[in-house]
Image (cartoon, rainbow, N blue to C red; front, side, top):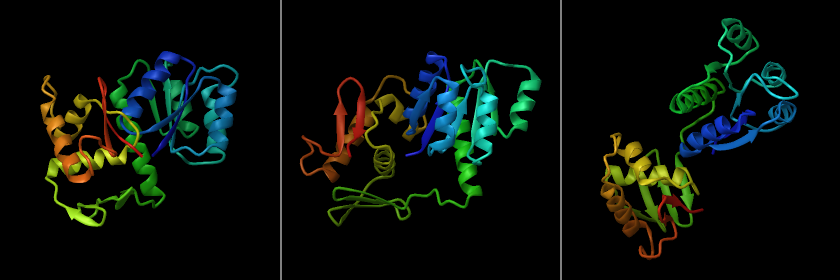
Length: 228
């Protein structure tokens, strides 16, 4: 799971960023102090850093310069400063992107995905997971095959997509609405039966006892999660 560091002293903004990123399968650490954020940014292992410019003790420019002295990982500046000089300065110090507050959380997620993918391509990393395995369940994403205790099980396209999405984001609860829009790529208008039916079908194929599932758990009032 990709790990994102958010250095932001506005708790409301930081929590909004965190919630949207977690819904998209990212692990998020929030730091509200510039000095502590600098220590984390230069000593921790993160896939991308999101940093505000105006922070207590150390500003975002200082953090950015320190990171660039050690690493080329993506850095996105999120700031209320709208002057071109600040954008030019931030990009000149090596920021990969600059978002002005207020911004769309969905846009932030899209930019995070884009910069992580671009960085991994530049570094020559293989971002394609071919085998996902857990407690007798194995998914080969290269061949689109699913095996349960070594025996191949047939899945429809949507069943397979739903299973891969859940198993690729372990221990994260996803609402039926989120799963519907992610897998079916359509707006949700109140009918979550499609997701429920597909979850039931998947359980029948992978669970030893579908009525007491060990893989895909129902979180009442919230949605589903894949247990590891």
